[in-house]
Length: 553
Image (cartoon, rainbow, N blue to C red):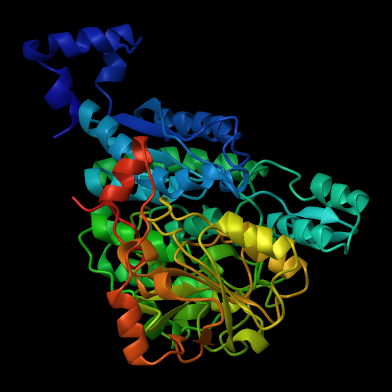
């Protein structure tokens, strides 16, 4: 049943029609499928400042195909601008605000279909979660990635900018050099140019089958991005006609495909929060340990920034996400029978794709590693799991033991790093930054970048119950669960305790006896923070990072 049958036609809907007339909708427009265009445009996020152009193109595509487009907004936070201060507590929490508010708008107004226009970080999974909840025909088209910056004749991106701050603090570069980096790193609109969270999730949207080819990789400033948006607007009308819905597409098999592609692409560790949350909305079980079983058989084919010297524009030129998926089919690692928003199967979509540049997308015969880009570590320090971006860890740090330097917040750790109190061999432990304890599970990009910028990336590890930016590289282990605020073992680590990290064997251990650990845990009383506003409600409802930081209801 279409919206016009429920809310438009008949004398009982005269009041509705009067309000549509107030919107300037003609009787002819009211008789067409009403298509929501969820616009994440704003003027504070570089990845969203161009979305007005994308939205205009979507509206044109919808109208060309016989629909009536109606725009309403969704919020988005720039994680880069929010980084390193209280603002970061409000990043992850927006994912659920976006899902809730978009669900509310779609349910309240009874649309026939939806075009979601996201781009950065929590905006993408939030809208995917809303799509799964509402489950009406939906397609995604992102704003696209930023072009790489240029500094001293070399391509660069935001992760290098944060590391430059660490180099400046260590006296390795002067203020003039820092200024050069500042002015050359982010040259265009779009989501930051490496395989950070925004681009990870926009690429995985393609893999999930919810976006058209190029959704994750066509640069924001390319005219092809406008064409893609028009095609998305047209295609939603086909989805409405065929009644193809998000839960028809985002099945258990599709989510497994996304996790497989995640390993090959070397996506952000934040995908290990968002994929479980999306799966939860789709009614699909997501076992965190599935990451290791998939990683064990999935080669890592891409080293985009921060893991390597290539960028989203390079991945696009090399054939994009479809080319990566085509490589994975050589090993029969994907379920190619799954449905997508094209109205065709994944196999049909990628049939003509091929790898145009093996220096950007390595072949399965010559991968960066035989195993995937993300690993889940367990042990007495993280019995419910922890997450590391394995593809961004230096070989010499895959196995490491060292003394703990313990801090109760990101700010404490950053001050110690800046003061030169962290030395080679140390394991920096930052706690009370988890979903509940932060609250909001802040990203630790400032301390991880400082460590790399000071030249300690080959000798210092960092462990936290918080999370990391997709821009983080190095031996950085996040999502330690249970978190300190929930009584986790990370809360009883003491300065000088030896911590053992063994990424190849998926181990994270506090090297004390079982008896001593039991005694510490028996006497442990987690610290509590005075909270107010939305963060107070969020802390009361949020689950662990191991479960995707979903809200318990």
